[in-house]
Amino acid sequence: MSSVLPFARMRVTTDDRMHRPGECAHRNIRLDPRGGIVTCRDCSATLTPFWALTMLADQYAVALTHIERLETRLARADSRILELSAELDCRQPTKDPSKPSST
Image (cartoon, rainbow, N blue to C red; front, top):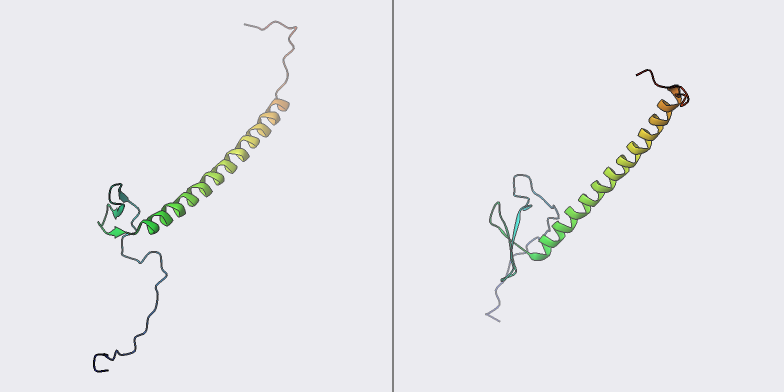
């Protein structure tokens, strides 16, 4: 048993933070299609493909949420324009088609 080396007890923790302040967020990635290597264009760090795929999926979900919110705002703006247009039409006197114009 002389080949067994004693190790001191070590505390192992995980850091679940997605981004650490002051570090690169790796949002600008480069894909190597031949080697399957993903690197950050900004800091040249090698990234795992799974991490890159997860990051892209998260960004896609954020973009879809933003698009849905903009579509909702656009629909509300369109309906408000129709309401204001109808209100304006009610306020303006209607022209009598039998009378010729003064021009």
